View 1: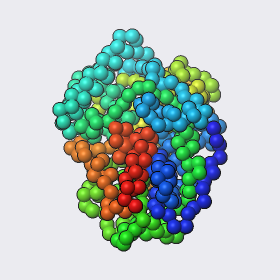
View 2: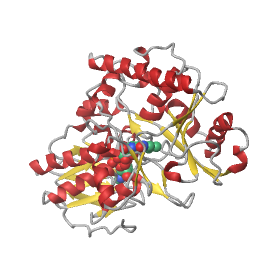
View 3: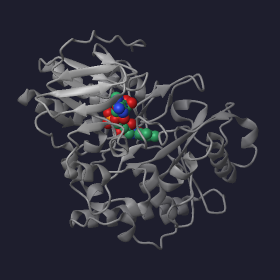
View 4: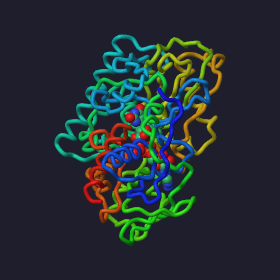
Length: 426
Ligand SMILES: Cc1cc2nc3c(=O)[nH]c(=O)nc-3n(C[C@H](O)[C@H](O)[C@H](O)COP(=O)(O)OP(=O)(O)OC[C@H]3O[C@@H](n4cnc5c(N)ncnc54)[C@H](O)[C@@H]3O)c2cc1C
């Protein structure tokens, strides 16, 4: 496992400029170089990885601020990459659930059975709608009288898609693949993704502000000067594109911008909380879930306890509640997460808390959200977004993640796929 990444020297006249050194950008750059193209990767932040980011500064142990699950692991390129580089994959497919009733009491075996049955019923009704080609909000097709419905729509909506249940497209959901097994990485999934930067010509701290594609190639203006190339691969989030952080001359066609707006960013806020070694009765790597009223948006913060045996747990808050809390100071989110936890494990937990914080993807100008979710009724926009323009502007990223949208794997594969298209035309 390498700890310090060495970048290659930047070529003077690159064939292609890749915008963004996240999973998609690094996937694209590697494939372009393999195809004999000279490349510069431009990254606004002072680090690589984008939304795949492991840091150890807060707790002295690795915390994944963004992506943490290696999901659909048998088809996920990062499984092999992680194994080859000596990372430790921690099985999470059969993780248990610490389940609590509405009154905070522990669920018994009958509750667990009912919870699992409710989960299957909800997924079945979503699948049924998607299979029939119905592109409607998930909340319109699922039963609404199940006892664990509030908890399940919270997991499937805010905590998975980053949007509430009424904002999930059943057809888009149907087209995504979700296979087992899944893993955590003890050293962090962000650290695995970062290995993809080794030997790439990456320029950090450089923000693209304007792309002029009116001539033969592209002219890319940044806060660090202007660069030219035959083509560029744009991997910034739909949040960044929708905010107009990058100006285009000529402007992007209306259909492209419509696709951007129909793929708005969802939000998942993580709330890592470090404890003094006390386990609070929660099992390592367990899901921590509790019954909530069936309201949209549901007011819930569900936890993963002691991932990989670390002494922290992390709360997950998504959708509208996540956006609302992100407008407040970080402490407000930590207090909310702690209050929810105390309802389950008792107020003694407060004595064992060392510190906590929340991730801030909502306010990060290089992301402006967690990942994109197709608006109900707009299945197909991922393809529109991905379509190249004039053989000079190419698009890649998690929003165009094919069978694995919103995931690091989908982003990486999208970068590679787009790079192959570039190699065919320049
Ligand atoms: C909280 C959270 C949890 C997640 N959990 C999982 C998970 O468990 N498993 C999983 O597989 N995925 C997960 N994801 C999703 C995954 O992290 C993303 O889908 C993936 O990392 C996106 O990669 P990308 O290359 O498309 O975009 P990014 O990683 O966002 O890369 C784009 C890059 O472009 C840069 N950039 C932006 N604007 C400019 C500009 N103007 N000029 C230059 N550079 C710019 C950004 O700084 C960024 O580095 C999670 C994400 C979040 C936020």
